[in-house]
Amino acid sequence: MYRIGIGYDIHKLIEGRDLIIGGVKITHEMGLLGHSDADVLIHALIDAMLGALALDDIGTLFPDTDPQYAGIDSTILLKKVYEYVQNKGYAIVNIDSNIIAQAPKMMPYIPKMKEVLCKILDVKPEDLSIKAKTKEKLDAVGQKLAIEANAVVMLQKRMKKMY
Image (cartoon, rainbow, N blue to C red):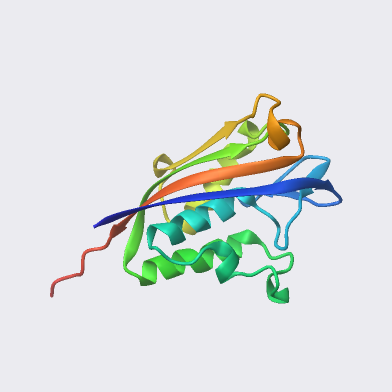
């Protein structure tokens, strides 16, 4: 059995925060505002996995009202959600994702993002697509006020071993 989930996230850019996307620190004068490290790509991946299993979203699972998640590294949250996916008997088939940012340029960081995410999610690089897009200077993202990401995840039910 296959299941597909779609995830989306957006965060406002502000001064005084590190910019973390895909588990990678990106050189930029601004970072993303959020209760955690505000990693838009990982948040979209989490919501896609949860959506594929018709479960709650990231905000319900890790509420921004809970101090234990303040400033948390989103890779920790991703690991927890992936463990949950595995415990439900599913494995990731493939992931397709987009990071939408007018600035900074994401392409130089994508290989490292893939390395980080493939390790956490136990997928091969050819099963994880991360694309960089701009908004052609339109809307809040295009005006460099925010960064967004979306992701689609396909899961497959693992076969039970016959003894």
